[in-house]
Image (cartoon, rainbow, N blue to C red; front, side, top):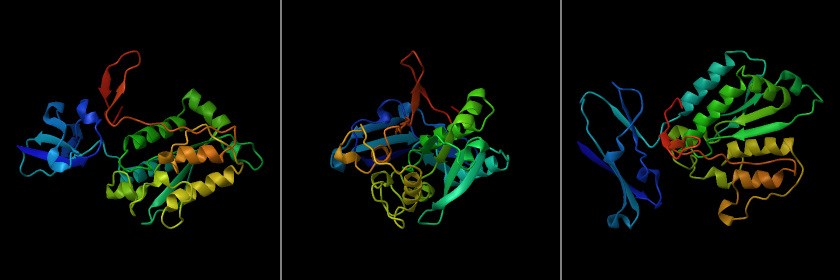
Length: 277
C-alpha cells in the first residue's frame, strides 16, 4: 500500500474535493478506472509554501504488472491520428482532411472540413462554423467532446444531414499536438500557454496558432468589435481575439467541460464521466 503526494497545486477549489479521483490502469487491467474517492485527499500544506497537496492511497496487488496513473481520461496524439485515419478510410464525399501546418516538433496540424460538396463549389456562399480544440494539452475532455461533434456531423442523423447542407464546418481538433504528445498540462513544447498568443503568434514558436489564425484572417478580413470582457488576464485568448477580428455577424464561444462529471437535466446529481459518455 502506497500513498502518493502530488504537491504544489495552487487553487483552493478543486474537483478532488467533490469526488473526483485520479485514473489508473495496468497491463492486466488495461481499461482506465477511477480510484475510490475515499482514498483521495486535497488539502493545504504548510510544508509547501501553503500550496495544496493531492494525496491518494493505492494498493499494488500484482508485482508483474506495470501501472499507469492519469489526472483524467487520457486522449493521446496517436489515438487522434488513428481516429482521423479511420474517418478517411470511409471515403465520405462530405469529409475532407488536410494538413494546415506542422508543430515545432513536426507533428501534423490537421484541419477537417465537413460539408456538402456543393458548398465548396467556386462562388458558393459559405456560412462557416470554425471549431478548435485541445489548445491546453491536459484538457483531455475537449478531445472527447470534439470527437463526439465530428462523429455526429459525419453521421446519417437527419439533423447532421441538414447541417452539412447549409453550413461548412472547419475543425482543428488539436491545436497543441506537441504538448499533448509530451504530456504537458497547459503549455506547448517551448513552455508557452498558446491560448494567450492569438494576438501575434510566431510562425516558428507558435506555428499551429499561426496557421489557424492565417486561415481565419483569410476567410474573414473585416474588423469588428466584441462584447467579450476586457480583462487583461484574458488578452490573447482565442475567444477574445476572434471576437475582435470577426464582424458583427460572427459569434465566438468557449465551451468548457468538466474534468469529472456532468449534471443530469432537471436534477443536481453529478454523474462521473466514462470514456463512452
